[in-house]
Length: 314
Image 1 (cartoon, rainbow, N blue to C red):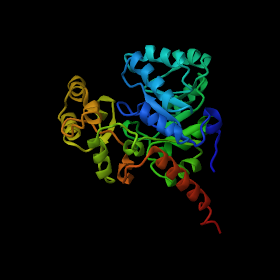
Image 2: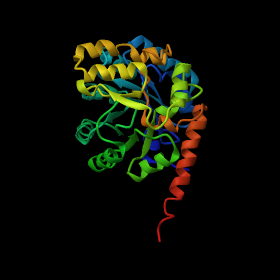
Image 3: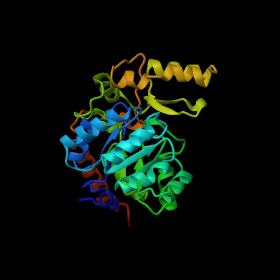
Image 4: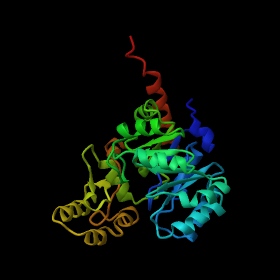
């Protein structure tokens, strides 16, 4: 059995967070992961307060265990969804794309554990100072919006820089990688890509099919030219986007091109026009399973890897 300070902090049984993937991480998936002993997370994405409140209440009908909400701070509805999570007393809020300082007092007064996602040491230090309960250090191997530093390099540097628990994210799909995260000093992991093919994940069948067909070279990063790097599968859309970047398209042109592309992939299964965001570990995801089976396999594989970690010692 593996129990870390992250379990005590958040009230979960197993130190596994499910990534808050926009248009994908809803009450169905979040509740399934929480029921499996991890922390399921609903993505607030760019949705309004009413949508999020409904998802939170739906999640509570499916599980009595802790769960979280991921808030993208650049959302036009950030202020109102920040108020909703306080009113609903969501146990954990994971933030991305910005600094949550302005909401900290409200959230902490509601008893919420605030856990920001960072891709740099400087931001981790800053957010610890303003009251973060823990930090998700996300490397560039992850799917969706990415930074420049890899998980292997980022996690130990963040661990050394802060005193609060660190969760490793990016490039984690099995127990070996989870064990490696612990060796780097993390107290837990956040997993996204593996949960894309969970039975309880409501993403389109086409999305699941494309992830299952992926190999080690199936992802590319678009948007670097406009400081909006996104890792996704190589598809007609992503390759067209990359060509437009190389040909000097403006930020406005690229923004229009990308608008709605994730929804087209996640909800419509539109292979030609959709952005199928996932991490480099997509090539390791080979079968659909229940969320509970995924969590249990991660835990079992991690325990086996940790027990065998001394085999090279003389």
